[in-house]
Length: 372
Image 1 (tube, helix red, strand yellow):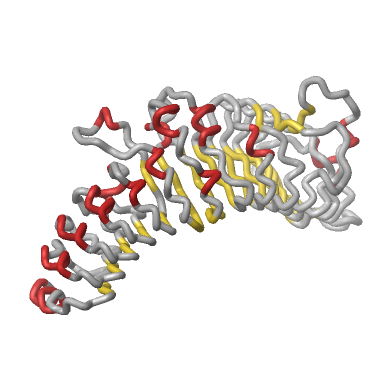
Image 2 (cartoon, helix red, strand yellow; image 1 turned 90 degrees about the vertical axis):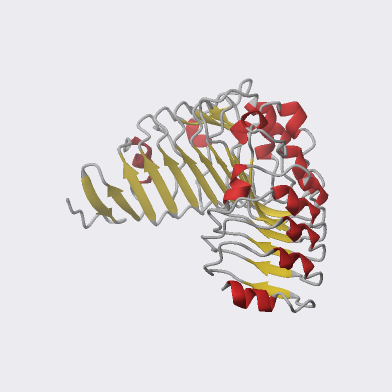
């Protein structure tokens, strides 16, 4: 491969070079002389251990693919010299999983960035990039995944200028904490990570805070929300007025008790008007929805039905005793949870799976029941 590559690198006006899935172990220094190179694909070169510093000379490079380079180690600061880079794919790339390079903010033309990893620089011998490196990357679009947020130690210094609200072309955002033993001002960090108003998809995992930011109720274009593994969060802000929300997943929330309601009285147009899929899993203390403090107490049945809901999953939520009606549900899964929330819906056509004890198919005229 080395001989063939040496020949290829003599073509000085080369615009695109695809070496993906090759057995390449090292990229020669000569690559830095390809001044016209716009596209370089090294994805899944699993034996690739080194990139030369001369890569930093490829100032016209627009696309760099390093996905799956699991043994690659190089000075990631080289990447910050690629000032015209638009697309950077670094999923499962060891060099970038170790840290975000300092100076990343210089890549202001970057449009796609698969994921970034935070690192506590006290554990590194060299300077690493902070979350604020994303500040000027306002051309980012599509999906953005930010990992190891628990490694952000000085929340004010490292995250107050991240400016996700200015990245209006991002449609999907993943925010992931990892180490549950870490201590930080997670509530303020999440507040600093507020996205723009037109975000469509949000996933948050292993968040450390005891409450979720109120901005969740304000992102009106959201169609998908997934919240997973919050060990300290007892309540969530109102979600019922998100007009385009189709799927809501809440899982592994150890101390979650309630999701607040924004208003006392609702109509079908203001109470989850688009919700089609609802999942609660592993929320052993979750009881249901609750009106915010100071609201007038009214009967629970004043909640409108979830008219568009077609799939409902309730798994290991033994304290969940009250749900709005769901007259049009087509599939429902219930496991290690109480049947009480279903009683007022039993007249409707549903498919019910009780994995812990029995499986039953219930039709509107209750003609057929089978046990497993």
